[in-house]
Image (cartoon, rainbow, N blue to C red; front, side, top):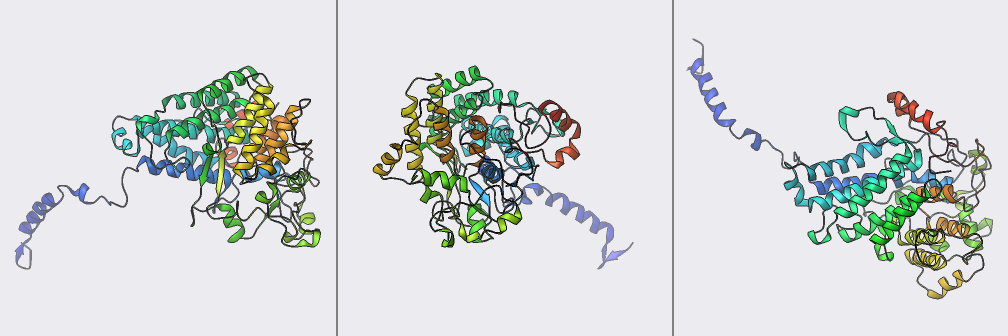
Length: 492
């Protein structure tokens, strides 16, 4: 018999077996890394979802543009310094995949963990289960509205369902919109502020009364978007939301608060302070604000650094290709305001009370709700001024007294459309959507544009064409050509 240091091998193996049996008892518990928990708190999932969805919309340090920036360019509120592909409508595709793989996936997990009997007790450590589910559903509705407004028909009913629907079909936009109204109604009904707040919420700090108001306000936005294609549905849903209780002042504004340091600071700070500035305030916006003596101009933009073009606020010409754009000095036009836009911790707007008041103005004009359209209109402009730090009442009053600003009863949609567009600065998807719906302000097609018209949607991502081809082709056959000029369902 072989021995190891005079110990019989069989005895050594027996001892090892006895030691092994004793030492593996509780082995799984001993070998769990406390810094790598097996179950992520739902508060962390909620924080991550908000962060990722804001990145998809406004951009971040890895995905600089987001979908909001091309939309701002289409709506002529921002323009590329030195010209660019988006400015001349040369970039067709946009990628929606990160919405699904990051933010929406995390929100779906929040709902599942708060619904499953085996996990809901632990999930409740982050706040009442029903309140967490309600917030996740509201955020999903917000995200999906942005997605469908940019692309039209998109994966929805079969999205986020795992391997069973690894190649999801595209849901038509009409169905999506009707379901968004239902989701927001049910989510608002789930909220019970008296049961307590939730953790991990960047937008409202867990305040469920604010989430209730936001749900109703977002339902108003969703409903109004249907004004041209389903006015009866729009009127009913919008009046319900107004009666339920939306935002009532700028204190209710839904903001995303960025942090001081990377990677959680403002991506626009990164673009201008830590990278090469590439965007100027579009001449369309600057010229309109100057023509109206709008005090928000100094909060939206900085004066041009190089004063060779006359000084003050100078807009970057819109619709230029690289050759034409490069002929203009980057420093001869206005960039976003350093104080309000380019700070590491600048806030970005998810939805504002100003928008709610504009929606009320239009709804009252259409006869959907009671009240004075012109008074709601004045309230909306005043709220926008307040949001952007214009605190002098006389400045606001002087602005409202101008003939070009006064509510035009002969063409109320022009008054609402122009002023709503101004108020949507830095909310690219919303300014682009409302221009498509109302056709105000009256924008010119890009001078160097490669297509004959301002884009009405983005093209589907190449990954869908390559990996989900059958469902992609079905969506195109139903919706229309996969290009920038095909209109989404509500854009009629």
